[in-house]
Amino acid sequence: MPIYEYRCKECGHVTAFLKKPNSRKAHACKDCGSKATEKVFSTFAAQVGGASESASSCPTGTCPLP
Image (cartoon, rainbow, N blue to C red; front, side):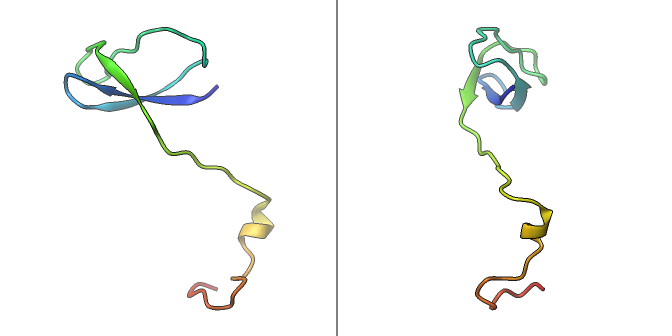
């Protein structure tokens, strides 16, 4: 299930929720309890390859870390 972030229109707190993409359930702010929330665009991360690839040396040879 995707994680969606919502910002409270009352206090500004951002809360993340696991939810089905077609769900219409209203979410309440975890700080103030208000149901006046709006969905915000959030960043995401993806891992490509295994741990051995991420531990390899810098391809240009100029990276400061070994």
